[in-house]
Image (tube, rainbow, N blue to C red; front, side, top):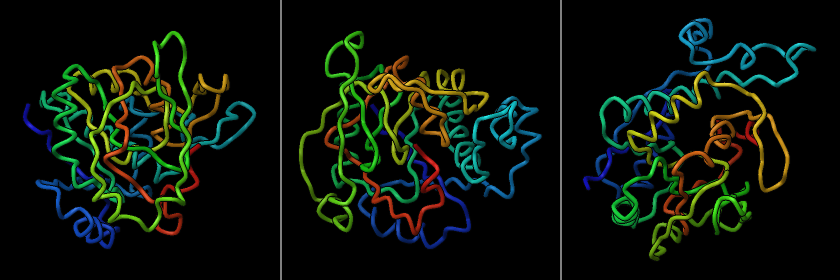
Length: 257
């Protein structure tokens, strides 16, 4: 299997982050930069007309619309991911999507390729998750429900080099729900499924099977949680990618969950 092309989701106003990414991930080959829109540049009526979003996604909260709308920068970020799903679906090739604050393991290329070759029918593989949020996986059959894994973001902050140098054989577990889309690979079939399921983008309630609860998503990763149980979705453990969740430098921090 040929390694998928890696595309970094980026906006031109974050050139300092681009420089930092290139230094941090200098060991990773063939990075392609994709430049998305800023929130202030969005044409929401056009997105609505094109069937990409629902009116509730950006309408103000009211009695008729009790759901909190997505912030413009969150919609712009979601559209960048959706454009790369469209690329995977139309090109017939898997695509690896990376956000510009991701830290990739020194083993990323070798281990991710090995796992994809061992699991050729995947729809999506998350190579990491946000350590300040939950991770729900199926340790047993899906009918028996997910198991929750919790992690500590403070334990990994400032340990970029230690994470990159950490060597271990990775494994894939079936994914139920998680937070974060900082690095994942989507197959052409998986991209087609995501486009059919996610569009038009909505903030309709999402079920949390592990907690027997519903929540209103505020970001694209929250929306995707609705569909993982219906996909051949996996997560890599130990992770091959990491984010430090630096609130000061994040454009989406505080929007999710």
